[in-house]
Image 1 (cartoon, each protein chain N blue to C red):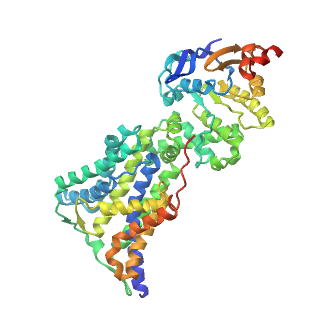
Image 2 (cartoon, helix red, strand yellow):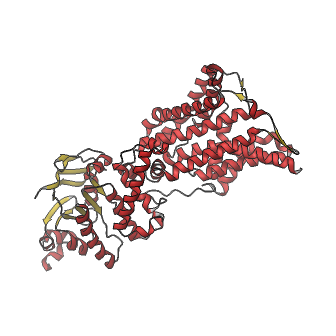
Length: 297
Length: 259
């Protein structure tokens, strides 16, 4: 493998990894606060992609406008999912909310089949993302740079919100001790809604970029990336945002680089994530950055 | 003297167990009052009923003449009652100052969404909250370690940090659950001074649960004694110390004749 090919593989890994990371952040944030695996998250990802497509074909919106509109709408849908499916079950056993999450997931998939039809749809890509940039032997789609850069920006914004704003402090407080947070005046339900909104917005952004990269839409398109991002979150240590980013990037690199170096394994590409999951559960079940949760006394 | 807190026949039953029965106390404005009794006497249960953590099976709580019975802990806190916990419940991974800031949220005026959008009003309020939290840390003597994580602080500092966080909610009535637990005699002495200081400085009424009799007798002007959920005595420090029922509850019946 020459250097040029390696650089291309490297950039591809970075692109795929940041897409996984953006989805994984949503899983990990919700888990950190509610100890709930939000299985509907992959459908949120799918809706993000579809709504952009809708905005462009039906309302003739320009790309950036359609993207922002879709992200905002999907954040709203995420908040609505929490309000309808999880909030009434806040005091119920955790398994009930989990079942509810699986229900929401199926519901959204089927709503998508009704509204958007089950046939896969082609995504129109703007030209400025299509024309490859050429440096010597390296040919790179602008998209391959655009995705990691936008992801990086979104992650930095998220870190700022979580570690430097009052709302972020509220989120961290709730994830440590929901009862005391409520006592101290953290409006628990509002902060949780905000968490769902932010997590869903990131998933929508990831879904949109995913559709640009693999330009095909279908109602179950969220399932595989969703599972993989969930594994990335577990690998990094679920509950930890840094862990989700590291896990997502690691998974992106493992998938692309393994196939690059061992082309014979290409057919097993989708299995790598699950091998990784089994390995981490055997070696360090709490994930790379996860800490053992102590039971409250 | 006017009463800041009055309870009428507070009773808490857990199934067949009566944890507290008919607790009727009145706490004068501006006083430091003790709530004492052997382990399992129901002291913390009383705290939990007053602060809304438990909904009393029977009875009522009045704070500044207003009924609080059945309110959520959040509403009680907003009404002006703050508390600390017997098993310290700080936000361990957050810094000392962040812990105090969280306490200020109960009085905040700008919303969560505004904070994410970073509106000028919200930024200004966050700055005010930070400044005020720093002042409170200074009051409890922790200003130097504002940026340390709460769970890395020594035990005594954690106790004081919890008090600072309670003060951040701008209470008029403060409940301290075993503030001297785990402190050495020197620290306990300082704690007594500290409790008197914050009472004057923040215009507080304080109710505390404490096992360290030196602290209780040294700082409390009045006290209530519980045993098996029943109020067995009330009065000033001297009256309580010589009350045979109290001695019996603490030391056992056979000691009463020597007392």
